[in-house]
Length: 465
Image 1 (tube, helix red, strand yellow):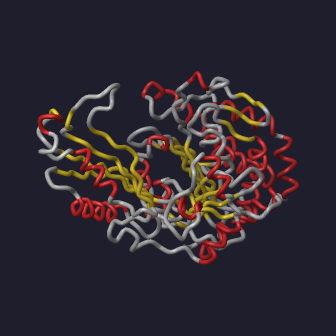
Image 2: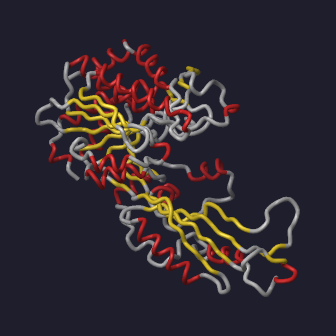
């Protein structure tokens, strides 16, 4: 199998070629949310399929879905070795507002060691790195150290509405021993991190109805329930003064953090006061007994995302509104489920709604949490590969956000998921001037080339959850 010296030499020799190829890929405006880019989505899928073929992958196909296609490829000749499924996405976010970009979003430009373009870090650049890592091993060894499958979709940025059904319908095609995803970030520049858990999501909208229409507050104020007062009372009932969620049973299925996990958080040496200053708040706030990082990534939350009702234009309008409402999202942790949380929220709201109004609760946006134990052999192998290239110990983190498709992969295929990213949180993914730091592009290629070799030393039984 190729040594690190051979990988270094190969990637150094081919760096300009790889960067030019990535720039071609990034030049395609594959914006899944906008119908006028339907042709660009097809073009990007075709470009990716051809790149996989050139890398030496086999059975390359552009798979139809109910929306934009997914691209599949495999190489399955490593007898007795594990099979690894690589997931990524080739679609990107819209680019508005254009005036905030310093260069054209689909005209990739290198500046100060960074490659600027929409999709550079999320996720074209990172998915492309896996293709080139496989190509390097094929060029150096004539074969891969593991069996490899790729599934790269075109709808992640619109919530992957068709991928779950695709996974269910193609379980044999996608069967593997582990899933590897590079769509996350390092903990900090020069500090590799493995994200071993993601929070789930459960959202609701609360609608409060009072009188049949808006009323004059002078005529009816004090005699008819005000829906804004009602929604404020309901919202206030969700937390105590310290920030603990007061919904009955909300915490009852929460899997507690282990001593090892809490120590891993302490080992990050996160500066809470620096975070407070960066956020420009008088103090940090939240559930007592947990650090800022634990509260924002490993504990469940209930947040009000929006409140609406009444008059909010310039000046004043003496109206008693007929309707008001709020949008709520809860971030969930293992072993909570969206359905149980919605039911508990409904029961809480029913118990706390004021007299004189009608309250309706509508669920939306649901996603399961996900976790792979950070002592899993596939994660430990990723840690070793990071450390060989970055020359510092890898840290283990939980993601505070949600990537619902990760939990779907876990639930449908029953496989460990390895989230090993090469982006940085500061790279403006989804915003103007998105970019990829080229140092991490260079190092990431070497990490991935080594990682496939590390995985070849594991048995299928070791990879089982």
